[in-house]
Image (tube, rainbow, N blue to C red):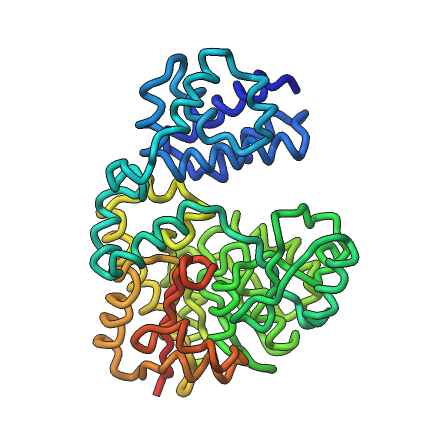
Length: 421
């Protein structure tokens, strides 16, 4: 494709994303369906450029004011994540001169909001929780793209075997530092046609998400519920931990999300998983399991602010009011899910949020309302779950799991664990 044609397409995509009326990944997928002739490299350039613009929105909008032409084109030029020579072939002499001037700006001298690229309402609680150096380390990490983590399906392969198979295909990987199931790939290679993927030996799953399944510690022959299963990444990890025995329910109110589990389930080799679409968290099928379940994982609907490396649009689409509404929903879901547990059963509450309102505050409210549940120290569970002993304490704060992108190179996660008396 001619450089200018690709840049114009990129500007078109950026323009649609900046409306913030739908999730960015949904819009990008729809855009690619409309432009089926695009090759893999062109799609990568378009997607990475668009996500780069979302990450650095405040900075790029400020810098773009000095240029001419459509704003979306100027933003696409500033966020370009492709071949530099290819970009130059798309630019006019005037645009090249402007870009050179913009790149000479000392960004360290710009106002803080243009450097961290976070909304004011989010900056305040993060700065309150973190010291200055930690805040800026987090802000920098959130403006980078996330690594590609894989979870090895131990029903079908061992981690070292998968690592060797990837190496044989030219893909370098390293074991994840905390999860005994994970591999971290260099770059973002296409996996869909590799045998380790098509045969179900691996699934794409962030290391932090793997740790939530490890905290649940699902065992052979148990009855387990993944209460907000979504597309089933943690469901598959739980099923493998159960060695394909017992009964594992994948609950979700979205049939569309559960549909995404089906092909993954077929690859995994699991036969102990039962996907169930609920009407609400108080569905009769939940009530029928009251007092019968060994373990329940509640990875609750949340702001997703721990995933800004993957979903940078969320920081512009979320609001303080939305956080309050989510907090009420999280507590309602947790209350309902807890009723399924038998005496001695384990409840895990998790989010991919960085905010205390969705994390510690919800855990505290639940504990106060449910004296029959005893809060368990997460470090002890992680040690028992084969997380390296010398790394456990780095994952925890005040007895909870607390993952930060700048500290752990994972998405931001929180988890609390209770046992029912």
